[in-house]
Image 1 (tube, rainbow, N blue to C red):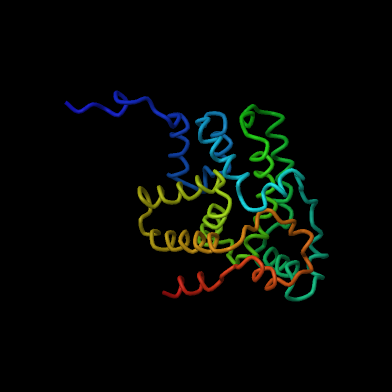
Image 2: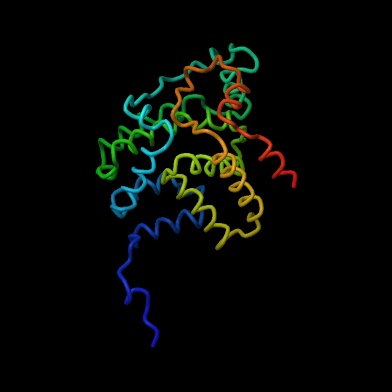
Length: 245
């Protein structure tokens, strides 16, 4: 007689949370990973939290950057537009304006995060470094898009998530890619080629580049973008060649 999985060992992944994960797998745009990760911290296996925290602090540049807890102030989009052509600031301005984005939406995520912490116990088990990085990651997300050269459409966002995961090993990006892979497997296999190509491009570019997560990009708006890419070894040919293959 074959035993059921429940009879062999107790579950590790909380089964109520697993149901929420499946909501995201069903319709990723209706139940986002941003919502899901807030639910996960309170029920996550302690070993998983410890492992994520250890990986974060072991990253190149983390020990110098994390203790300062730097968070940026909102941008003046017109000031960004006055930066010289070819600079990070000008490229960032173009990324925001050309794609119809809000320059301060992710910068101001720190306020929403603070309100969540004040109003709920969901984040009580979140280690301090991971707590800080969850806010800082939102602030540099569009800088990372600009530096890596990824568009903010669904394929570009998958590339960006894989790039982040390759460099930082943060749980949000693990979950983001897990949701994408599961949605393809069980709901939309037609998206398989585009999504897995995007994951491969982002992962390979992130692995080959120096870590960009522990730099105050707000202080480098006047730096030429190509100089930054050269400094970080951002290899845009991976994207171009893979996409053309």
